Image 1 (tube, rainbow, N blue to C red):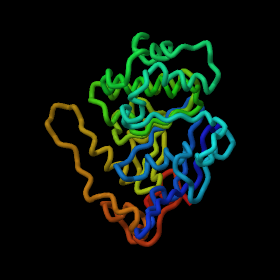
Image 2: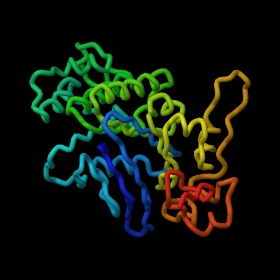
Image 3: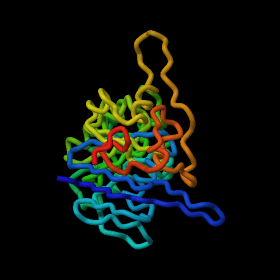
Image 4: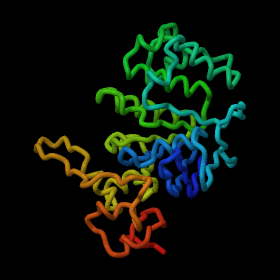
Length: 302
């Protein structure tokens, strides 16, 4: 069963006097109930734009997004029917109202689903915080505690799909794996799907059932986490894994991925990764490999 289905999604950003930026350029992805999918890639590859489109925060240019069999429509001025999608944003301090007590903010989600049996303090306990924290304001907490509060607020609306948009990047190293595991455990426990977006592959490896690798608006490889980690097939995936530090005590620095992500307003022709690919062929410069689950001419499956 598929909970979230993204098909050939295109999202463009337009500004007067500037070229069109195609932030998402034909991405396809699915998430099932109780499944954790990790979406990884360098900064600027379109991960957050894809997440915002799934939530209805960014309009779709082409393609489609369906949630539980129904199309996701962009948010407007009018209130729309609840879709069961909630997002945990990158910066918990910016996403929480500094003037309101955290318990009141969690209660907003409970009211949307008419849950009168659950108290905000109950949800704080679920994310590992004391009940008395419900009476405090966001500035009284650390970054890791604020992110736990943001997760509690998202869970209050009983989502069937939880999206984490770089939810651990603003946290210190000691809190990152804790928050990531917490999101996985709570999503699986409730039967909700989790789309976890991060550039930290080592954390994604710990929590994700499947990994989707994104580059310059495209999904270039999708597969089971263990299989992708053990046998990465796309050259970009291999480069990302080589860049992960290894705590082996040898003092060897991770391999650096050469070059920079191209400008999405002026992407290269053919395969978008070919200017940085060590295995580039003539075909790569001429035609974009738009097949999957590995979008690379080295693995042409047609």
